[in-house]
Length: 92
Image (cartoon, rainbow, N blue to C red; front, side, top):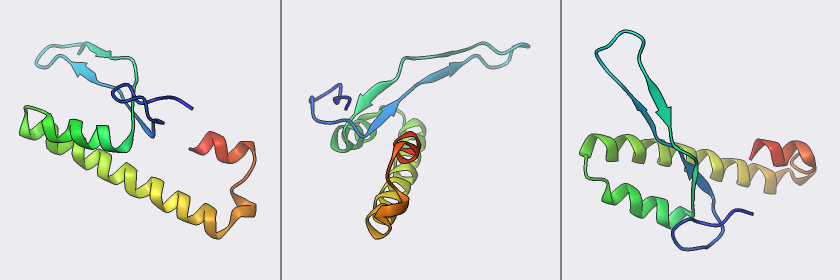
């Protein structure tokens, strides 16, 4: 399991930044490498972003993904026979 890049606990999420140019034909884009975070460190990062719009966007994405993750975990506990094996590992 990957470790949180901030605290070393088991990571639950990874964050990738995509930076794009605006106002030019043939937009240029570059993505960062993925950076692993545990739940609490990603939540703390969202609180510390200096742009309200960026903070809101990252926080909304984090909240939606966290909800989906919790739903998947709950479903796997309710139906353990359908959530085991290599198929399940690829989905998470």
